[in-house]
Length: 272
Image (cartoon, one colour):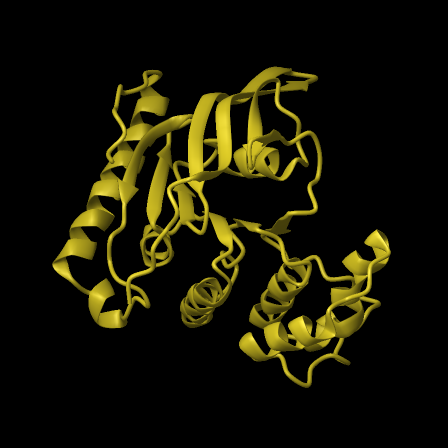
C-alpha cells in the first residue's frame, strides 16, 4: 500500500547550533544543522555516536534551547515544550507508584484536561495492552513498558511524535515487533514521526527518509529516500535494494566516524 506524504513542512530546523558550557570547556553538539520534516512523514536520524542526534530531538521538542538557529512547527517558532509534540524517550519513564491507567492519565492531570477514554482504549487495544490498566510498571516487560509510553504520548493526540531510540534496550524479536507496531500506529493516525536510532535496518523499515548526521558537531551529511511500499513485509526487507541501501548508509556513517577520528569532515551533498 502506498501512502501519500504531504510535501508541506511540519517541522523545520533552521541552522541549529547548540553549545554546552561545561567546567572543562565548551562542547558544540550541533553546528548549523538544517532539515525539514514533512507532514505525515516518518523520518529517521542516524549517525555516529556523539553526533548530536538526541540534542537535535530535544531541540525539536522544545526541551532544550538552541545557542543559535530555530525550530519551527507549522511556521511558528518553538520556544518551549509544545502541546502538539509528544515524545518517547529511551526509557519508558513510567511512574513506579502508579498503575498503567494512572500513568496514562498523568499528562492530562498536569494539563487539567479530561482524557478521551475512547481514544485511549483504542490505543491500548492497538498496542495489545487491553486489560493491563491495573498493572504497575514492575509487572510489565520492557516491551510492554515502551508500548505504554507510546500510548501515553499519543493519548494527547499530538500531530508530531518524537522517538529517541525507544527500542534500543529490547531484544531483537521484541524490537522487530515494536517496529511493526509503530508502522501500524502510523498507518492508523498519520502522525508525523521523527525517530532516532542506531539501527540502519530499523531506520529503513520505518522511514520515508533516513537522514545521516556528521560525526559531531552534528549537521546533515546526507539523506536517503526510502520508497518501498507500506506495510513493509519481511520479503521486502530481504531484497537486494534494501541490502544496497543499508550498505550505502553504513558507509556514510563509517566515513563520518573515521573523518571525526582523523580530525576532518567530508563534504557531501544531500540525496533527494
